[in-house]
Image (cartoon, rainbow, N blue to C red):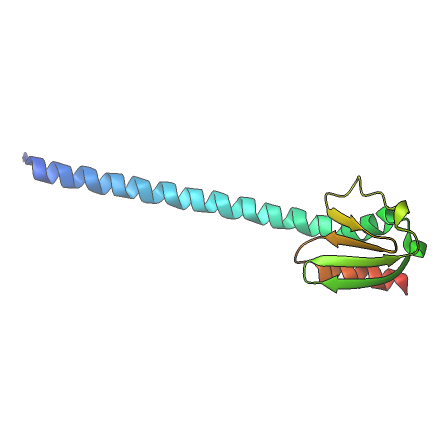
Length: 121
């Protein structure tokens, strides 16, 4: 049996195939994006584990820190001597004052504060 298709039917078949192909491509792109996002979150979590120790080290050690505060996305460290601060290993913006160092670390400031406070006590 031979079927004959007119141009409208052929156009509909091609359009359907293109839509399916586009849907498959979008699905694959979304899966790749989620995978990258998941890897990025894991990397950030790993960095957060080391961040309190890196901050303490950059501030001249635990003995130089007298108090820790958290202000939204900033971590404020009251220190005996801010001139000791060496943040070369940190990718964090810092504001140095005489006896205070303010670090902009993002949404995890409160958890980093808690970890530093544990080490202070």
